[in-house]
Amino acid sequence: MDSIYLATDDTGLQQQVQKIMSRNGYQITETANSAVKVVRDIRQRKFQLVILDYLLPGFNGLDIIDILSMEHVSIILVVNAWQTNFSELTRSGQVNSIAVKPIAENNLMPAVESALASSQEIRRLKSELDELKKKMEARKSIDKAKGILMKSLGISEEEAFRKIQKQSMNQSMSMKAVADAIINSYKFFK
Image (cartoon, rainbow, N blue to C red; front, side):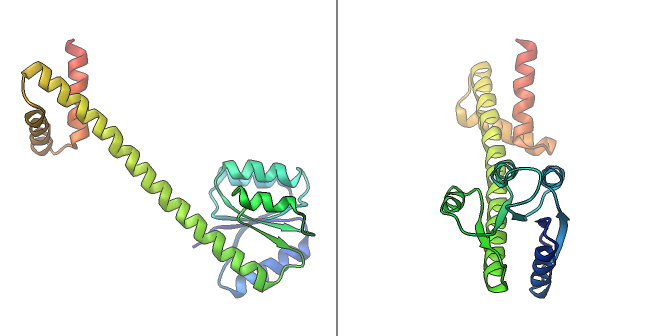
């Protein structure tokens, strides 16, 4: 289920947004009526989408956006009237979209769908990036261990790789774990 946060002190807007979201199969997970609560909640829990009233008490709307953008959360900014400087917020990626009051279903739902899709894509890319970082670290360790084996045993790179691979299979360990053990042993006996 999508985790959606609504931040407004306007009870009419809150009821309207919740009604629209509910009609379209979404549920507001949590609400806040002050900027301080928003910042605290977003830092404690991860939400996929924040629907943020620009005039929320506690901070300037731009300050809240700056803080939330550090938390990598999708934002739909709700404003009283369009201003040209809002375009920069969407161009820079700080907010996914701008919704002008009064909020209507045909304006809010495309923004919600788009923001949630962006959130999913960001999570997928972050997961891929984390996996690639792990593979790079493993590759670095394996290359370093190969170098140690090549130097200390006078063997080729291919033979060193096969030794690490064979030890990995025999010990039911990852090649990175074997490589790290070789590196640590080399440091210890050096």
